[in-house]
Image (cartoon, rainbow, N blue to C red; front, side):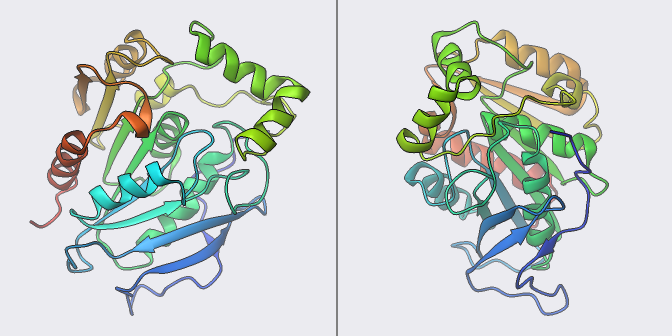
Amino acid sequence: MGNGRAGHASRSIDRPQGETPRRTPARTFLRTPDGVRVDAVYEPGAAGRDVADLVFVVAHGFTGDADRPHVRRIAAALAEYGAVVTFSFRGHGASGGRSTVGDREVLDLAEAVAWARGFGHARVVTVGFSMGGSVVLRHAALAEDPPDAVVSVSAPARWYYRGTAPMRRLHWLVLRRTGRVVGRYGFRVRIHHRAWDPVPLSPTEAAARIAPVPLLLVHGDRDGYFPLDHPRMLAEAAGEHAELWLEPGMGHAENAATEDLLRRVGDWAAGAAGAAG
């Protein structure tokens, strides 16, 4: 598995044209440079804002997809601040291919961002959770046309971390044939059997390359997957262009994000990306 170019132009099916932006919901399959079909959904936002305003691109966590209730809840909360694009990473939901657990998923995100820009929105904010949180960091670091702001929630700082029981279970799921069978039929995720080659840019290395794009790092102090040294490492690497929120009582990723937190994320993104009020 290789990294590919995160900024490669999207080759989507039924892509909207920038000069005639659509304000109605849309669903299509995007096609990545390595030939994977990615299921993607566009929603213009509950506020019906002008197309020059903000669009969020939401990158879900491992075993999520665009139709999962926790992803729909995130999308509904962010729709109060602008349009929202959700999509299913490869190997998840209706998308094709197999999950590479954060490696080639950067290509999926790049296609979703390019599709979102095609609707005519002037500002794009990527919001990722857990695995998706690591993907938004790498995308922003590698993309030729990076987003206007990045929000990374519950992301790891380094690869191959096995310091918690949930992460040891995840490694069993990914690395063992029996685990991949459980992943396919128990969690509805199709996992690639090949190891990373080369190993992708680490989240910490990516965070150091994102400036001057504004970066918000969000992490719960009760995260059962990644302890607090992970967000602190990311914040230190990112420097003054990053803001770190350590949330009291919060667990891991989408299911742990409260409505209050999502409102604060929406407010931060609208300001950081320079979106019109």
